[in-house]
Amino acid sequence: MIAVIDCGMGNLQSVIRGLQKAGGTAVVSSRCDDVAAADRIVLPGVGSFGHGMENLRNAKLMSVLTKKVREDNTPLLGICVGHQMLTTFSEEGAVAGLGWIDGTTTRLPSQSQCGSVKIPHMGWNTLQNRKDCPLLRGIPDDACFYFAHSYSVACAEDQTVVATTEYGCSFASIVQKDNVFGVQFHPEKSHANGITVLRNFLDYN
Image (cartoon, rainbow, N blue to C red; front, side, top):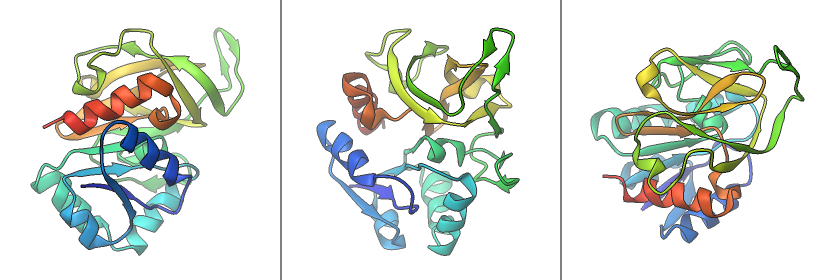
């Protein structure tokens, strides 16, 4: 069973539908018992990093998530803000994250050497694959995915960066550290490529 964590942010039913298309059975929940029973965990999010972390604490999910991920090695996939919440710290409100990915969440720059870009970054963009990763099985370099975000992840360890994307700067669009995965894009909105990524996560062991 896949537990999709309800952080009180975003349309979780679209994530459920994406997982179903990928062949999974999922439940949306903020109950500790459901998370404890899951063999896969998805941490989605749209909105504020701080709001998401506060909701995890209010639901008393921090200890069960830590045990599942760090002790039981249960695969976890963070999506969009959920991907950012995997980091140590966010500039958005100066909030501490889960700390499972060594890095920080920083605001995308509106100005770069290539000119100005609109923030938030919304729409289709490509991935530059940097290393082998189970999530990328069947995904070619420069494949397109759907993004909607104003902040991005800057990893302290290069080996955790699986793929990058260019938008005013180069940012980590996929990360992995052991059984913890994060994607900045929305796989549930990314058509066939996104379903492939979700299927690869379900197949990971």
